[in-house]
Image (cartoon, rainbow, N blue to C red; front, top):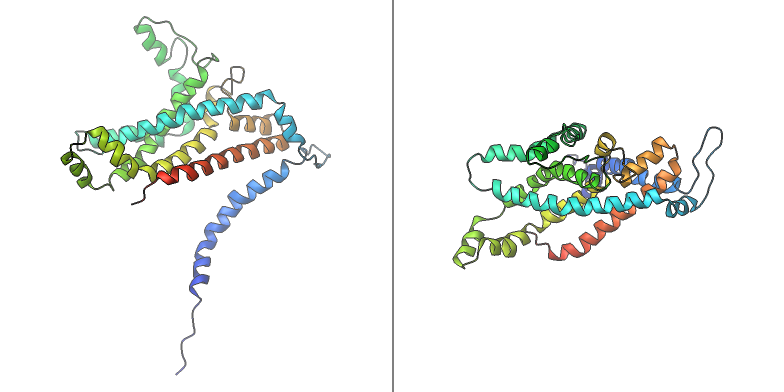
Length: 295
């Protein structure tokens, strides 16, 4: 009796299962990053003039570009303004809706609704809120006896106004992750803390928050990426103005690449953006992972 043929080895099966994801990862992540880096060392082809190797010339021009430095500084302020507040609000909202309260389902829906709205729709909603004289904010300040102002037309307020929009958009999204993490925490831990005489704050800071560190690390990385990839709101609401006061790094890349048609210089700025994101992610994993407790 003939013996059945041997099937493929487990290692071959494993690689075959990983192959579709690996192809997509290489095609849409690794190859574009390598191609962009390579393109940043060449000039921009124009008409019949092909691209030529220029070395670090695009990076030298970047060091002398005041709009690049302003966009980078704006983006750092934007990240510092959105990330801590969004994560803090997400934790507070998740703690609230995780308890048995009246209307819990409605609150969860209300918190998560801004997340599912298209970015263009969100930008237009807040554009109406910020409209001088007729917008909701000026109507409220008028009722309070305060004068109105052009929130998106003043360099002093435009970046703060954009930060508020981003927080409103993202806090509900991050809340979902914290809510899922809280549902995995055993209620016996809170009961034990109460028996030991711990206050709610002590229970949260000493017990609950360390257990939420894996979620916090994941949310931090996503919040960092989101803060550096915002472009839709800028195009609809401010177009980087006034006087580049709301220009962020990705919007400037879009502007250089598609408005000024300088793809090589845009590629160089993209490489800098990738390096910033990669370095920040490495630092977070390197130092925050020590405080992360995995269940």
